[in-house]
Image 1 (spheres, rainbow, N blue to C red):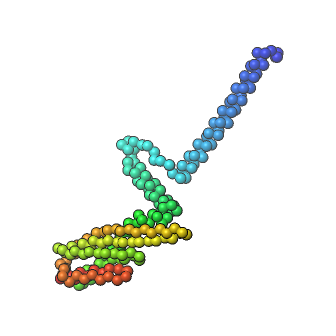
Image 2 (spheres, rainbow, N blue to C red):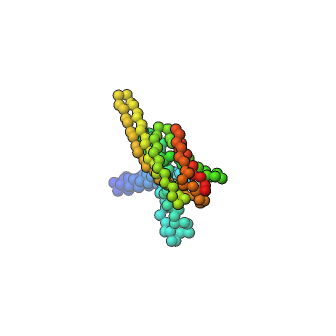
Image 3 (cartoon, rainbow, N blue to C red):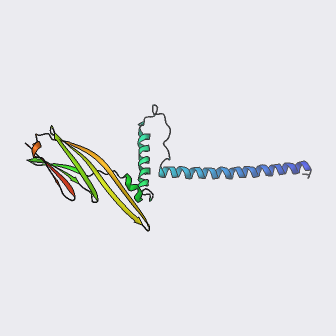
Length: 191
C-alpha cells in the first residue's frame, strides 16, 4: 500500500467511524443501565402516577386510579401533620374539636354525658320535644403563649348541635342537667 493522501483520508475516516461506533455503543449501554435502574426503582416504590389505560377495554376496575390517588393524597396530608410549620401554636386556631358526647340507657332513664376539655368553657341549651333531645352548645377557648418579650393570645368560639331520638316515651318535665368541672350530664327519665 502506498501512502497517498487518499489512503490517509480513508484510514482517518475509518478510525473516525470506529470511534463514533464505540462512543455510540458506550452511550447505548449507559442509557440501558439507567433505564434498568429506573424500572427497578419503580418496581420497588410504585409508579409516581397511574398508567393511562382505557377503562372500557381493560378488565381492571376503572376506579382503581381514584383509590390510588386518594391513598396518595392521604399520605401527603399525613406528611403535613408531621411538619413543624403546621404544628405551630398559630395553627391551633383551626382546631374545630367538638366535646365528646355519649349516650347510655338504663332501665329507668337515658343518660347523656358530654366531656368538657380542660381550659374550655361550654354553654349548652337543651330542647326536649316529641321524644327528640336537641343540644345546642358554644365552646369558648382562650390560649396564651409567651415567647420572650412577645405574648400571643388566641381565643376561639365554636358552635355545635347534636340531636338524640328516644325510641321509648320520656318524661320531658323530669329532665335534669348537672354540670361539673369536667363533664355535663343530662338525665332524661323514661315514662
